Amino acid sequence: MSLKSSNKVDTNRYQLEITVDAETFEAAVEKAYKRQNKNITIPGFRKGKAPRKFVEKYYGEQIFYEEAINSLYPQEMENAIREAGLVMIDDKVDFELVSAGKDGLDFKATITTKPEVSIEGYKGLTAWKKKVEVTDKDVEDELARVQERNSRMVTVEDREAQNGDIVEIDFDGYVDGKRFEGGKAENYNLTLGSGQFIPGFEDQIVGHKTGDEFDVNVKFPEDYQAKNLAGKDAVFKVKLHEIKKKELPEIDDDFVKDVSEFNTVDEYKSDIRKRITDAREAAADDAVDNQLIDKLVGLVQAEIPQAMYENRIDEDLRDFSYRLQAQGMNIETYMKYTGLDKDSIREQFRPQAERQVKLRLALEKIAELEEIKPSEEDIENEYKKLADGYHVEVDKVKKLIPAEDLSKDIAVEKAFNLVKDKAVIAEGEPPKTEDSADEKKEAESAE
Image (cartoon, rainbow, N blue to C red; front, side, top):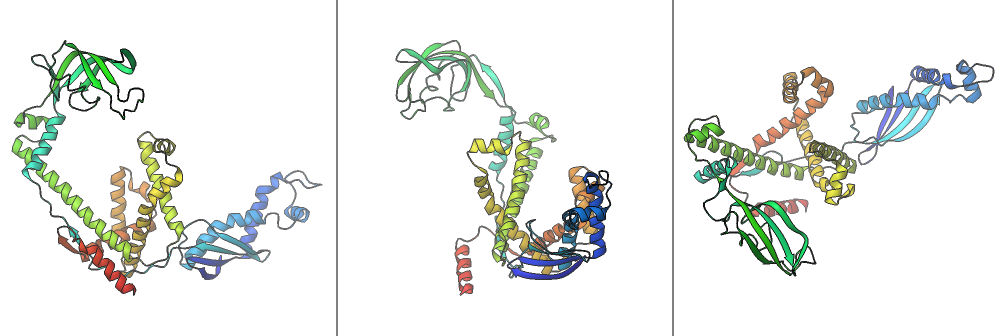
């Protein structure tokens, strides 16, 4: 293979002229002849037995060229793109055959490439980190949630029903003296005070005891979804079978031993405080990262091909589809439930995809400018990390992920770490004037 030329013909568009030597092209033609000959019939020869020169004389010299070109094309293109130092971003290629014959193969291919990127001012970016505080109330609230999760329902027999209780009831509804559809149920569990039923229904159960039979008089709301009932008075005949209340366990050392690995309430509270602190610290760090990412995205100077965004949307949609499948749903069912079509879903993913593409371009350029090159040890450690994460052998990961691709990902990560290390992190919330000041500065620089 010989890359004769590589010429920029438009923004992010290059035309490559590629030559395949005569010997290589002849070998591909011969291979195509051997594959096709078994199905070829030539007068005077048994099927599949005609010599190549007779087949070419009968059908034309170029009969095997198309298959030969198709077999050579993928590898020749890959070699030429690598030799030209380009990165093709999609598989849409404008192909032009220049010549094919005994002297070899010559063709042109016009491809879309990654854009040329410039970025300045990525050192010394300002971000704001919220001060993390954990109060005693935060700890008590979390402890109350654990207490709630470990509660149990007990039957109440010595008092009337009250809000917060769960009652088991039969009810039978009437409007204008006639039963209506959907107004009857037996052994129905209802939490009083939940607002699950129409206004007034639950309030009239409060104060009754187990075994009581009584009427509940209500009026359907004017905007009730069943138009035939909207605004009408109704009577429900109710029988109260059982009253249950939630019983919370006492928070003591025995409770702590049951729900955790700790022995005392104080130890458990200390652990809760630490977990809340760690979670809020992580959230605060993520917020800093997002501020820096937004600023890096804004610093990228490049004419980015639309194809890069579309490719990223495709990747995000595949990930989304996998997550849906893990939940027992597919994308078609999701569209049915949400009323969205594929174009609408793609548009929902577009802002995220554009941000991801610009961030990757920014970090790749920073890695280039800073001459960030992962070591062999970095690559091996990352392979091991991935293998441990997926619980597979390192060799299996190496077969799935080329070292070159992994090296680029590590370089990008190191580039972002460099940006964070050089950033100015202030404590507190971003000043409200920061965005407007940035916009003013950008406007002035543009002038």
